[in-house]
Length: 114
Length: 112
Image 1 (cartoon, rainbow over the protein chains, first blue to last red):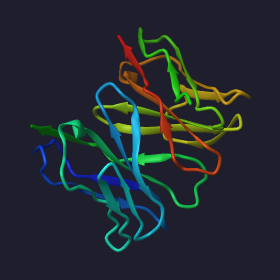
Image 2: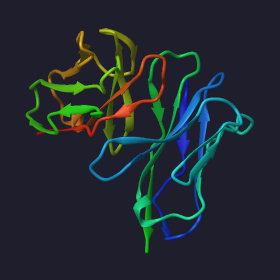
Image 3: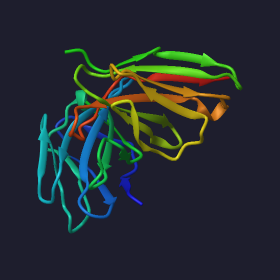
Image 4: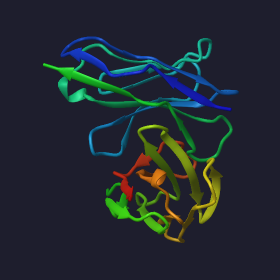
């Protein structure tokens, strides 16, 4: 079946450091891929998405490229801020699937210090 | 416009009881999905409703059920509560034809 694997956290960085959170997936066909962010005590917010191979999703300085050949969707940001501290989830929505039955990775906690 | 609204935000129930959680989607969204979030299992898909019909279902026991009303509001019910049902229950809504899900803040259920 479909699955998502994320790098284990926590990830601890200093402000302005470069961030990479690895995400790989298993799915047949071409799923849609997402990154969600969860701040303490909150629900999930969609950060970015990509729906086909080589698409690059970007938002708020975060980027991720849909790599079919490596089945990956790694999240990157060039310079993190303290306000980026949160839990980040990689997710997929199965190909040819109506609706939004998302499959999530376990989440990666990011902590940024000043 | 208003986001996804979940009520109540917090609940404490006793083992063996049942509970009903409510979700009001973003205006115009007709799809509502539910997720369970626990520290051990992470985020797991429960079910999705569209136009009052269950469209997708995750791998949860029959104690977990849901429904959707004609105004797209949704409820989920958990019967015969177990300690392991303690979790954050998240609801998400999406526009017809879109797979972008917008999440509510969740209902924190504690079973004692």
